[in-house]
Amino acid sequence: MSQRVGEQVPAPVPPDNPDAWYAPEVCDQREIHPGVVATIRERPDGFAYEVREPSMTPGERRDFGRVREHFGDAGFIDEPAR
Image (cartoon, rainbow, N blue to C red; front, side, top):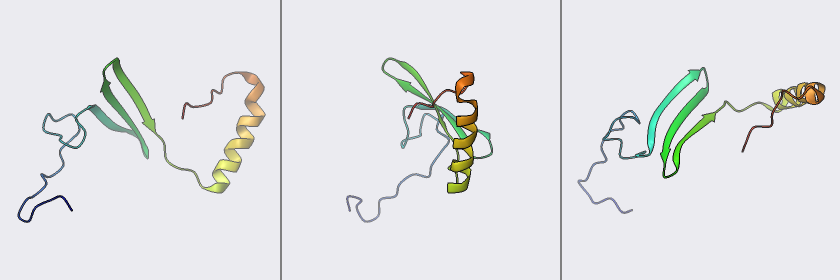
């Protein structure tokens, strides 16, 4: 363990706070829908927008796969970048 006895780690603060030691590149982070978190990070080449969606149960993944397959030829369902 690298932490010395008596040292304390500061309490977390919101990511957009300049004192956010744990995520200095995060400009903003919000829950835009229950379980869906959007994060904006500052990168050397600009800003990156990331979305974390809730995980699906095996049954939900199966159902979602059937919906994607059904509408696959319509051209409006894009595969998310992973």
